[in-house]
Length: 284
Image (cartoon, rainbow, N blue to C red; front, side, top):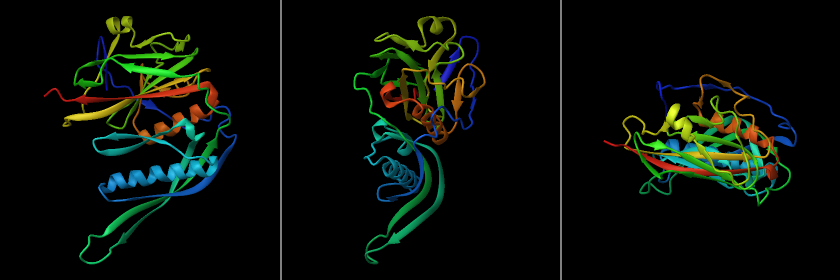
């Protein structure tokens, strides 16, 4: 996504470091977990990413003792690791890859070999207490589901209870943009069922527009918006070093880990999440 200002087009980078919010170390445990994936119908890169995702799921399941539902970002037939749903009741707050292995098996010379990747990680998982509030929900809506390059994106958000809204854009190039709050608008508090528009009508007229585009040389990309509602302020903006009005985290893995650390400091009952997928097609 491109962010177009009324005066100039600016790309703004966000420099992030490990941040330890309140309670991050509580109820956390380090475990070793392994995930595997076969190359059947997958490229080597896809199989490796799938194996890593399964290792992360296994780590959370070992600590939390529940079945994990993972949310996977698929872009240009490539798997990108994203958030683990809050139903897992746990977040990975740090990880280290210990080893990669590949196994080859073959039924006979007349059959193709079966290749699988396996990865072993050491992950620190923060186990969360309590359960989500079923009456605390957040919903996000876009002005389109399919955009052409150059189209303007408008995001509308509502939550069932008062709280604070954070909106992130996971782009096809692997970057993560913190759209809201930002240095132009730090006040992200909303009342119950209040409609929040990003950018606001005033911002669209006087300051900026959100324009989408495909990656150079691509005919179509899939991206998504992540909306997070919390009853207490999620210190994303203040906890990061920012240049300009918006920030861009240029690594999905790092961004997901960092955001998980922020989110995990807030009890399950005091937050809600929503994901909106969209496509961008080339206008050529």
